[in-house]
Length: 523
Ligand code: URP
Ligand code: ZN
Ligand code: ZN
Image (cartoon, rainbow, N blue to C red):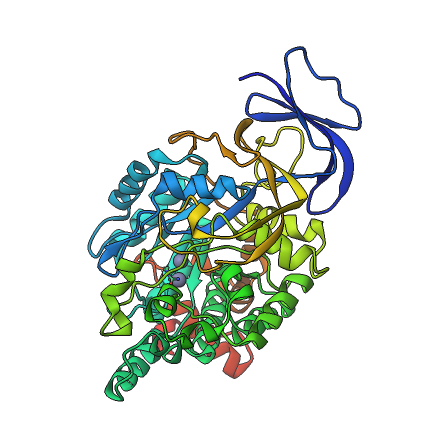
């Protein structure tokens, strides 16, 4: 690969912007400066009038995922090609073991599927049950496979959902391994009950999906997950935060010093619950996802969270099903495959609705589309920053570019787009993926298989801080060698992976407001 220079643009990182050229050699940025000399033969990209930013990272995709009786329509090839066309250079997908499948086998399945990826990618691993095998395999997943995030579904009862004891055990294991738990926060028991009640009343259409998942089920679960995480000493990342109640739980937790992160989706920022009132069944079903779209007032809360920093990341949860697939639920909203697309549109839409309106600065745009998640996932500054030594994942952003979103022109394999007709101002003129031009002036150059798997080490700085100072660690005092010693929650983890003794002791100490010397069995 030859050298390449990006000339005349404004380099934007999350903390600073300046006019500078960027020199790339092979896959890496080798110089950033006000007037750089290009080596002979270097390809020159003119970035005059453009912003030069770290490529986007979308930490929430479901490519070629078996789900609700079918498989998502965008595979790793077309999902990542769509991403690159929209300025996103890395995706993080969810490895989902099917019931009874080992995490190690699921990882191999996902590695196989992802060989087609055109952009870089990583995985989160889902914890869908608890037991010794899961406990043991989590360590291999972290240490051998470079996965430092574990996903927990608090919804999808009877399928992926895990209960509180499973959450507690898994979060404690994450704390011990230096991994970050992720949650889909909806109270699955309450959702199931509401679904039954709606069906008993004859509500079978897509609107029933939204009625059965009000903001309260998300607010309650978010709060519960935060408290459970705190008791184990683990930080927490809440995916697809869609409503004020969930955002407030996150903001409250952060204000009290907890390391909790929230991820609104571009869909929830821009689309609202009226989508489910359409007379056209297909239109409403195409927009069925969990959590559902909310009233507009919730959007204001999410935008405020991005502006103030109480929410950190904008993702897509790209989980694309065709209209034909959605029709699996034509007689029963519970059977409509949950999910919507957005990979190609996230960056242009967020720029349009965020930066051109003054809601976000261009630096904040970089933070919420790339740098913040790179830090949370512990791949910063290799990803998420334009700096010497970083991967040359770069987007040359033309703030004057315009397009109207339509399914007719999208790379995604589905037959509609939930943002159909939205006008965007600002978009990628060029996307570089590890130094290679992947997208330029409307032409896709990335090829199937260009992407590389990105390993992510455990114990991010935030995680290390949490282990030293979490609420659980502070509370879990015990007597050792005749004097009090503060033990980390993860140290107290029993060999079967539970920290129940610690939990009981914490509760007891809270009640008596003093350290107990009794064993957990006495309590
Ligand atoms: O509706 C959604 N969000 N589908 C994808 C699976 C999930 O819950 O993230
Ligand atoms: Zn989810
Ligand atoms: Zn998802």
